Length: 472
Image 1: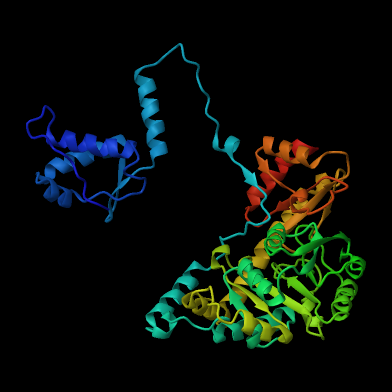
Image 2: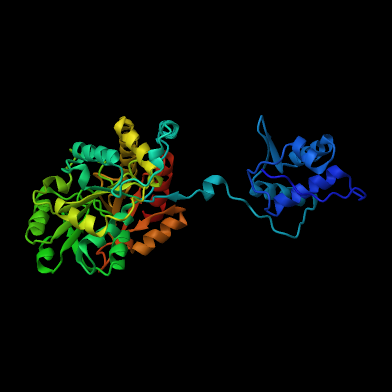
């Protein structure tokens, strides 16, 4: 809230309250006073302009009547959204000056303009425990701990690393110590650290299709990237033996974007390949392993690693919120020395305050309760989406339905992916082509990704009904 600088003309034709009213109205219409912005109180503005308070009251009253501002009890006066004001003003103008020459423009209802976005990256924030997070944040800042405002350890605070270590062992079977864990602001940072640890120009194998962001990051390292096609069990390990690669990047618990869950036999093949060379490693990206809907939880690949060949990477972005921006990496002990030599001088990229809040959130059991709640919510959405897709069974094959927050629909007919995306868009539905994640070659059949995490039940129903009209 700021004082309003208004040039009042005491000898002008218009009285003072009209000048105040017109000035504020003009500022709102021209975007210099933004929607939701608080205006000065009538008392403070009257004192600032050296006019009677009743003059300001009259100006504000006129603005209220015309809908330019609104009064909120015990809070003051606030600017109304510009879009609403524009529509109101246009309607008033047309009512006063009807033009039979101009065609009547029909406005669409909300239902007709609503857009359904089946993004595989969206999550449901309705179940987030904002009250708990706020309480922990308040308690953390009220402690008066000056240590929180110092730089901290490069790998992240030991207390958080210990908590993450215990969580990973109990939930994913990961075997590690807090000394092996590095905390960073997102997977991008951790992958950049890996470049320093593994070296430049490293030949690396990646699944095809794959997580394109990781692919671009490895490209920026000048890594020689070898793409390995997949079958129903995941990456075909036979090609790893044929190619001169040192590292393989895999997502065994729920591959993105195909949704494939790698069986134990294929996992053992990967570990045998990694154990067949002194400097071979597997990067296991376990980005959304918390959400599984059928069968027993499958331990991480790292849990079966007896030769310390797996570099494990995980994040709290999917399980808690994208804005948390806290990821973690578990290094094999053999690589810790390289990390300390090459990267030990890098500061941790996560605020110590955020680390403390997250540590308390996990340690006090709130994270486990939140996960249980979100599993229930996502399981219901997952089941609903599968039910809504039953009419598609004749024309599409559904896969990736055992875990995660998205499904894959592969066309059985001759439709192209571009056609599927286009016709869906015409029905106000956004779907994502699987080819967006391809690095090389092309798909035999058109396939699209349907994410359900960010949609509510009604949106899932409406969206699939529109897809049925578009595709069937």
